[in-house]
Length: 234
Image (cartoon, rainbow, N blue to C red; front, top):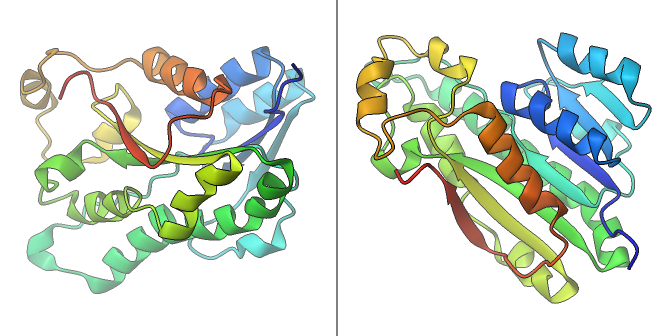
């Protein structure tokens, strides 16, 4: 049977997980379109080696997604994550709105843009991402991030019904991964946080990217409307 998944769109492709996952998918001969905002040196390096990689610099806060032509996308993965260290004690409405816009609203715009092809092809995979922090309410410095990521666990009814057309939507709740993101969080005691996890260790970038790759390339499209926990037991 011919491979149904040909072209994969990844938002946040320049993140630690995004780069490793992009590399894995390219090695498996998939076409990948990577969206990034900053720190794309590794993506540009990959682009020199793989003709099947296209990358676009898009600022989700300001750039209009509809200006970009993402055609014939078979799978969309949202890895973008805006995180500011705005303490909830200094509540900032604009910062909360910015988090929601970047981490949630732009996903819906992209999904609506790529759905016509998926419907026509009677196949598609959509993966949003949440954070294990949504289970615990987020910390004082990550509350806005946790709220915006929690919204990705909400699957509107019109998307839930798409499984009848063999189009799935799931959210990956990602646990404590060994990425640079944790270094951005002010006053976070990472050793103490790790000790609170059942496994007593961070998930490696290689582990999480392999798990996500397996979910993407598995064409038995029978899991949908779920929050899939990839949290090392947390």
